[in-house]
Length: 464
Image 1 (cartoon, rainbow, N blue to C red):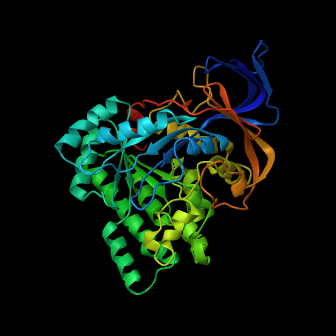
Image 2: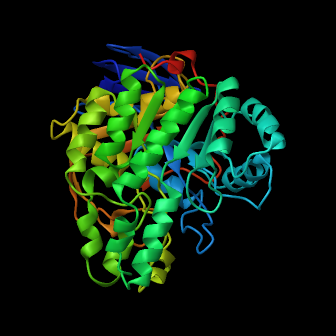
């Protein structure tokens, strides 16, 4: 189907301009100040912003965390994403059986997504353990389009420093990106046990048992290990606090290729949420936890000065019933929040419309930079001729109050209940096909495609 979008404000990370855009055969066929040709559909975008489809490089669909399985699968989660203006996700796969190969989880997840996803998708490799077989297998994973890998410094399959160093060295050789969940596991477990022993079991103690120092120390350690690994490129996921940002900035100022992601929950929510009574505080349990509110201004500054490169979500959803397992013991509450649907609307309303960032920086954070860092650019993340027609129209005049009833995933609450937004996506298009228009879904399960991602671009090997 051909689509002609007229009179739009076309926004990329580098510039904005007025014009028309023609979509044909799933691609952006032509961009010009004025286009008058026959098309199957003509859309007047007067007064609206046309941006490249959002790219969320941190989701957890269909994940089993041992005590619970997330309530969003690749259908419900990607439908929610589409309503929020996201057209591509890169999912962090969950752990597989002990000792499994890297390809084991890739095949499992590709099978899950193939018949369910309504938007395009890829995956980060998940490193559970290190041995010669795993190190050798990394090359074939990269050949199969997996150009980034996740390792954990906490949880059951945490890696010790020597194994982290081995992984960094090998991934650096392969021109792949190492992503890390940074928390000091020993300190966290010590604090958790001490709190439980003294009867401190309410949700607030989840946050107090995983203080910012535990995250910041692990960030600093990873930065130093990456430096030892011949300056291996390093991507810090879900940065939540100012101290960690200070370490990241220090490395960046030295030219070390260290990159950072933050998430809306750390920009709009704070640890006072854990003080709510009953099950309310349990809704916000995730790791790293929400922080003191003063960290938020520091993170906004980091996004604007370029220290923070992307905004993702860490979308990992559990129902209230699942969250209630933590009543009386915060350690039994599955960690995670919904966010894939609200990411773009929150960042546009609170960032662009309130003057905290330019609309071009907004596009860079939520689409262009993720596409570049994770091997999808210029197929995605940019509005230019020949790129995939993954497009989102945002109406800056549309006012929306976030409520659970207006969300489209399977989670039965939203952490942003009652947030009043100015500006909202009114159309989402994937490869020229309209998925969502005026709150109506037009996509179908299995419409999304697996994206084989390229290796890390050479320009990301130095932070200058």
